[in-house]
Every structure is written in C-alpha cells, then in structure tokens.
Length: 81
Image 1: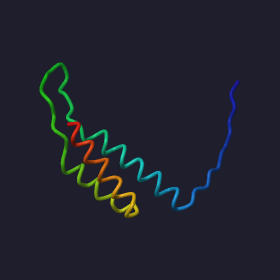
Image 2: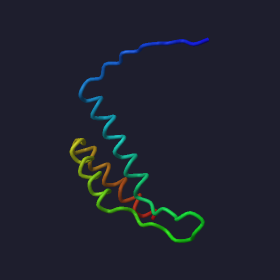
Image 3: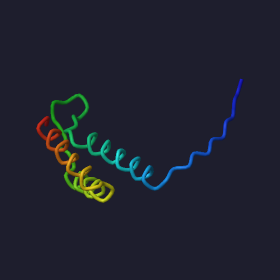
C-alpha cells in the first residue's frame, strides 16, 4: 500500500535560523575531530579553515547568548581532541 501525503510546513525566520544554526553546529562537531586513514594508525587533522568558516557562520546566526554557549561547547570539544 502506497500512501502519498503532501505536507506543507511553514516556518518563520527564527525557526529557519535555528535549524541552520543547529546544522552548522553539527557540521562543526563532525569535522573537528581528527579522522583516521583507512586501515592505518595515521590521522588526518581537522581542516582549520573549514572550522573557522563554520564558526563564522555560527556567529552570524547566533544571538549573543547562543554564541557564548557555543564558545563554551567548542572549548569542551577541543579538550576532547
């Protein structure tokens, strides 16, 4: 049985910004850890230029309070490296 459902979801600008912000934070989290080469003990360091670009966008989409929280989270991520 196949069911087709067309849903129209309307989001306001704040909701769109929040989705964008969380997606950027996820991208930062995924890219800030060193990655291993296949079948090797060697690692590829994180791309600092990419992380800086993502961080700049996070700053753009964040309120001051959100960005301060992000700075704390980012410091915790760096400690885990």
